[in-house]
Image (tube, rainbow, N blue to C red; front, side, top):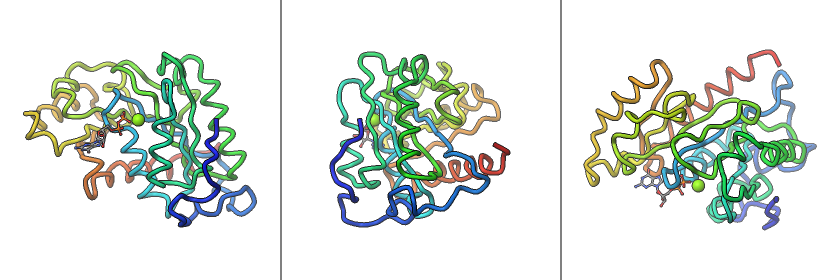
Length: 237
Ligand SMILES: Nc1nc2c(ncn2[C@@H]2O[C@H](COP(=O)(O)OP(=O)(O)O)[C@@H](O)[C@H]2O)c(=O)[nH]1
Ligand SMILES: [Mg+2]
């Protein structure tokens, strides 16, 4: 399922550790741990691919990153990431999930696990692998056998009552991203109410309200990834 578009970044640049490619050149990860696997779930259109793209752009200079996308019938998310040149092509793998995107991340995770393991084998020690789900409804969460942490992305245009409605993505994800805050005035979304409802549903679990496409909008999400990676690396394998 690997997309063989080119062997170098489409923009012709190398991107820090991600530009090195191959399995020989990368240093061993501290402590010898495998890459931190982070799932991104949430409804179609909430901004999962935009979040993946922004994370890659922000972190690729300091971390070795790869991405697995899950599309229902197409490879559109992977194609978008390739066009945007967020990472060299060999670091992006598409899994086609058929009709049930939640099945591929929760029940029959074999295609995704294979994609993740293949990336690590091909590219040498990686720091982070981002796995984007095909997008579903509010109930889709990742199997703990596939990812070590999960981000759930919803957006203000989907309705400001979504945090109140709960569901496992909203209540149990390791990070809740309430995206597209720039649209709040246009859709009449009450951001304070969304933040309050999220807090009531999630207790101490973190939530960020942001617009990942705006300048600096990805900063809190990138910060969270760095923290998780530090904790992951420090924890004995
Ligand atoms: N206004 C606004 N649009 C956004 C933002 N993030 C994503 N989008 C747009 O929302 C649409 C869906 O985003 P996408 O990342 O493909 O959603 P996905 O289906 O969850 O992967 C695209 O047109 C994006 O450009 C944001 O922060 N603000
Ligand atoms: Mg997407």
